[in-house]
Image: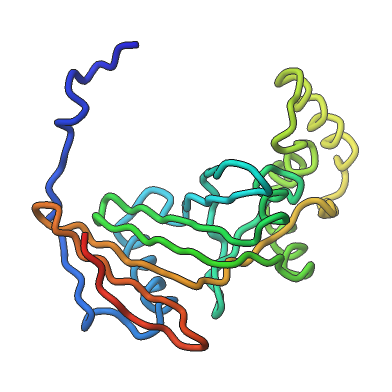
Amino acid sequence: MAIEHKDIAAIRQDYALGNLSESDVSNDPLVQFEKWFNEAVHSEVLEPNAMILSTVGDMSLPSSRVVLLKDLKDNGFSFFTNFNSRKGTEMNANPHVATLFFWPELQRQVRIEGLIEKLPEEDSDEYFQSRPKGSRLGAIASPQSETIPNRSFLEERVANLAHEFENQELVPRPEFWGGYLIKPLYIEFWQGRSSRLHDRIAFQKVSDSWKIVRLAP
């Protein structure tokens, strides 16, 4: 196995775009997240709503994948997926999840740990119908995370559905697809600093309030 870069250990970048102190952050981590998220959007970060979601199923190894944040609610972070996918079955077995936002253009990341719960069906119905028709058909056609024989298998299923719904815009949401809400118990804001002395401000849920602490980098 050969990697073009001869010395992976020498790949590094110094961080000097900003700083973060306890006096800078809101007392509410969701308000602080909204502030940072808006700054990521305004800075034209590529897909600022992309987040790495990590789950652990019953007696299985952790697994991670990128999903897209679709809404920031008063009590957490929402996204949508196939309930029968690997992440769906793992979250059903173990509701504890972790997720990570990384915005390298701002030298920032946000780590979130919390509990997962399904969104109300009305929320899932509303978002499903807001998607492009092709995305709705794809969600129905794909038996997400299952082994399939080839790509033609998917393309044929989508083609059949496209023919079935050719003359109607409304595509019913399948029961196996919908939304989740991550209710945070821990949120950490990380700002890159020079010489790897990064700023880490963490919010820990204690009863109904948040305790703010600084962590060593």
